[in-house]
Length: 159
Image (cartoon, rainbow, N blue to C red; front, side):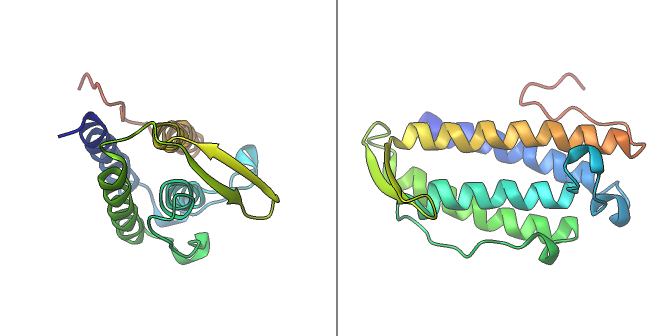
């Protein structure tokens, strides 16, 4: 099996670690907009992560077109697990399509920007996973501001 399949499985496992941690947050805190994070909530950032995956590895390469998820429709951890279940399906389709050729260029237009870009599947995949980890760090910082003690959600863990 291609290394990217294994890498995504590690990312998916740590995402579940994060969602399990989010289960310990009150629903009010999970959905509370924090001024120090641009007036956004933990639930908002999770939906943003899912939408980023769906666009860059689903829609952009014409693999799997999904509607943009609206943050207000995903206000529980259970609904987030469902949303990320769909992301996992899109990731599988993407990796299946580009497994033999992760450097094959993909050219497409960026909606609302009137530009066309060419990018490789490896660049797309790297973008979405680093984007997720960036926002995962923010989510843990948000929870600390809300009075919780964040857990370790890194791929390599020492607990």
